[in-house]
Length: 272
Image (cartoon, rainbow, N blue to C red; front, side, top):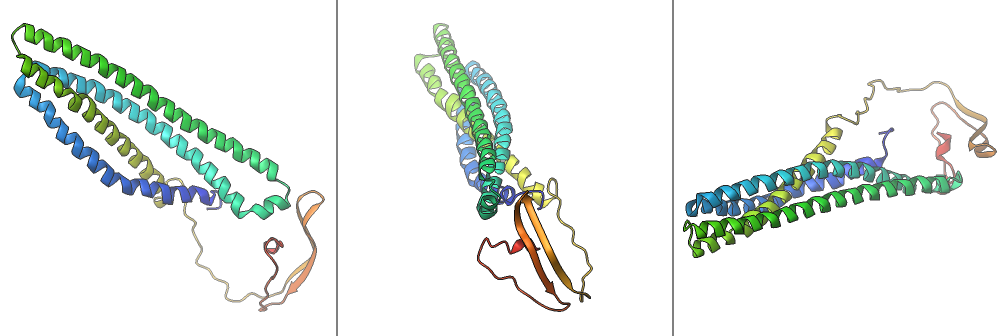
């Protein structure tokens, strides 16, 4: 815990657990639509096996592109979340240590670090969007080309009396379910699976001590302490000539309980 800001744990405990829980109902909806439209693919087999093989080839090509896109997008997503953790951590420390930051006159340097991390986070987000847009454009263009080839194939089969015009129109109408809906739902399902996998890794890195080692506490306890506790002319400073504690003197006798009372930001904690 001492080596990691609370923002890191907040991101993983809240955002990642929410993504894991959302995965189940979102993926079921995509899977239901995917399976219902796969039936359209096999329906073409009973009409014409050549068109079925073409649709099968198209599905494999487009599915491969979606898988490649999902893998690359998942990697960028992990990098983005790591940067988001840095920003969340800094904001968390800013809120909790606002008075200390002002007292140490370090607002400017802290804000420079925060702005740099926000810029890096936004850059990672932009890279994700560029990657997604590039692959979406490539897949959309390829789909249009494959649809044009499908039209040529159907015309060829009609001219060779292998298909009637009505059957060709029926087979062509299946394209929206096979080349569009199936691919969209497959892409959504793959992205959900990758997000689920990334979120699980981040959560279990806490639960299973993969990244964050749990603190081990000793089993010894001091029931009584002999001796007194005394401060004599104690001076403490982070910055030269800017003392936080200046000539502090007090004594606590053995067995005595005392309390430090003062308004927020009065530097009570520095005594410990």
